[in-house]
Image: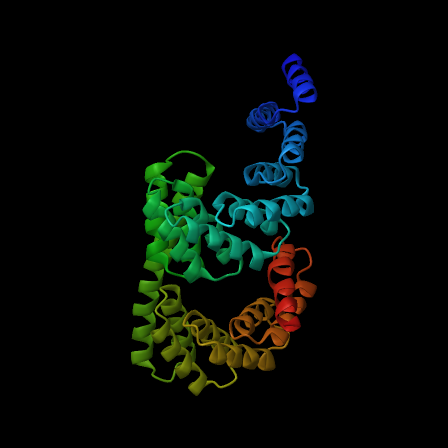
Length: 353
């Protein structure tokens, strides 16, 4: 404190620019020390002094915005980060931090834009790919999530957590062998802990499921040879092919089931899932709708799956209806808040365009 008082006196007596610079540097260094110590309110006070001394210091505005994000004061953080970027339009750290602020406000489109800009400014910074991949995953855009996780791992091949995240993305696409491979890589890097145990359980369970699927395919193939008009055998074999992510063969078997038993609601649902995985949204929506006609009291997951298919097909009004219906029927489900925030709000924005 004696140091800062002495510098202040010198500034008052002489008005010299060098004294002003030294005071600014003192508070800047003080702020960074406080950040490292996790003392964010005190750090904010320090960086406030820096920007008052030099309102054109982009780095100081970034530091202030970063502290405000850590404090959860997001509107003020965005103001500070806007100032930093206006002063230095190529300030990649400011774009990352502003993206994080938008992310925490659930404004995912703006967060995505800032993360993308940061990546453009520094394509070899792994962090940007990681945070953008997470948003793609939250939006159920698994292909783009996987692409970003893969780029991240090219830059940081020993990050176990990202192998786990990419494995989850592969699971969501039912690409089981790739998911297993990522789980195994995770275990090579992190063999201990609860997450390691979860990965081992997944590998064991999925390998068992794939073995059972192979056996079921063989068994139901024999049943079909004995009775080519056995609709349930085709349906069961279709499910087994779906378990192996062999969507074309699954569709063939569900087609045969429906041909033999046009009122089998579950065959339409299964075929809709297969079309969904093949990104054939129109056919998926048609089959999910037929399922509801045949079984109005059927699984609530129908609304979620058809809602996402509508969304992928850019039919946002219909998607909004289905996803709100899903939330109405599932108000206490753990993912309900996430769906409301990530899908419904997003589609309302699309409808406003």
